[in-house]
Length: 283
Image (tube, rainbow, N blue to C red; front, side, top):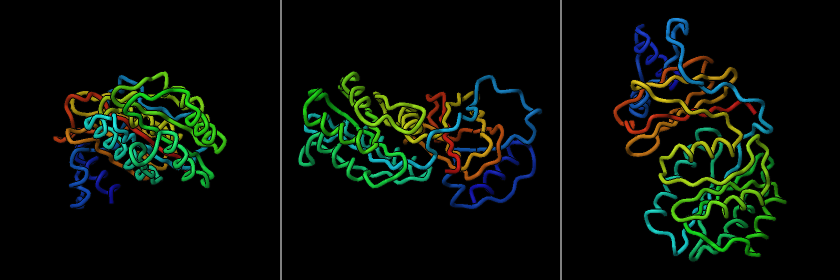
């Protein structure tokens, strides 16, 4: 159904006849027109790199993911809200790309950061593909504690990569040590720490793509549209567009390769000058 809708949009954008569209898809995709260029040679060449296909990843199976939200007493409500927004975004990205992340919390009655890591590792222990914990941190904690070291060693032994994501007042060096002590993953990118100021930040999408062995690229927006390049053989392409009410995701299954024009709609955030494109290959 989505493919037919995109084909109709391609007809309108390219000047050809428009086909009919389906109501539910039309409402869901109102902010996006993802259209294949009818003839690449008829358009001006894009001025920026547009996500050339990556080298073969070490493991292309969908990652099994757990998001650990920091609900400690010291986390301000605004920071906790950003964490929850980012957790929802990762969950949506996971469903769009073939996995179903679990979201757990630590802090208060849910135990310490080390307890959360141990629970998350237990959830992932029986999965035989890439295994990832997104460890959210909303406050600083004492680095190098014995409990944390043991929990990270357990994750490493179980083949679980730890990708720390900081919100609020955090120590980036401390988070980087968490990444180094977990498993180093099965993708080209080794785990690393990130700090996010906004749940709509494209950094959340980038971290998800790197941790899950996905291809991804940023596409600058110019004149209300961006050009993206769909790699040959891509199984799924997802476009993430920061909107006023959150990140909008638009998915296409087995799209034809080549350049595509992505047109922004009224719900897109005009202050965001780029979108992110993710793609998967058959496992």
